[in-house]
Length: 392
Image (cartoon, rainbow, N blue to C red; front, side, top):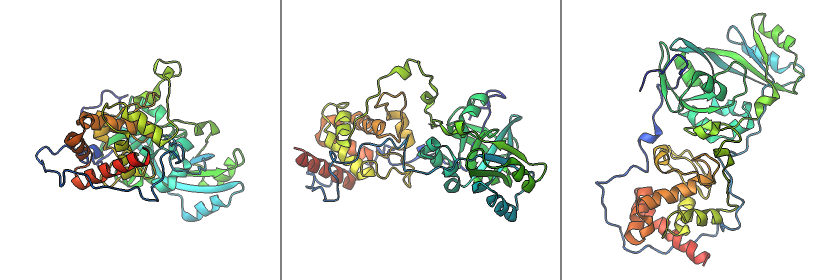
């Protein structure tokens, strides 16, 4: 790892980090040349529970939407000088107009002498306290689960953070900056998991977030319960409209009016249309192969991971493979592993690079590269034939 570029080029993330791109289903095993179990693919029929691709609900961009989370945005952020006792937490919850309270760990760490203010949270409990676009971004929560840092977007710019880079905390572990998102909390530069927070020595239970009707929770009542030394900050509603920028998606910082922002964005309405459009990237590749892989890997976007091996998104790419073969399929300026509009054409790109467009044994081997199992190959190609018969 390189040293910090400067005092401004700060940052963090994890001694506990294991790079998900270091191993996984897409690593090429060149010394494992096994002959196919059979020269022909067994016939497969689409089961009744397998939905027709032209009648499924419209494609959803899980990178920008994802499973719904009802957010309860914080209205006040209070930083106490010491751990907030349980009875005080109950008293806060009973205050007029307070509907919800959460207490998390917080503190400041230094990198090359530069102070960075962090919250340490349990991701499953904290998710609903973030702006909707952050709550709906799987990569943010995957990063926290891996023990990595999610930096506030403004702090990332201010400190010159490099997404994907690791930095040495003064007197502590190395931390990796996995993602950035607009967190909307004044003075907070990033969030880590509670486990990482303990390793960093953050103060337990000193940060209090309160949710209720905007502008109705009385700061004076909060100060009375938490003591004179408490810092109480209002959290504005304007903080709830961010666009998270995950992984290496540097394009997320583009300004309106830039050449990239003027690209035409094209998104198909159904998975059937999406598979057909993506297959045109690889002459000779049938769209039904992509449909079969989409069915096996995520049931067409219903189960996007992360998998136990660290594969992500509707086509279950390992991050390292995505870095090499991912594409901007819809022209929005991002290569989003979670977006079907990018992931499906990315799969076509990966298959084509391994000879899928040539058909026959080349196709079989290309599918084997996708997942090193001949049973997997037979299942995918059997489903592909079933799709071809269904949509003939």
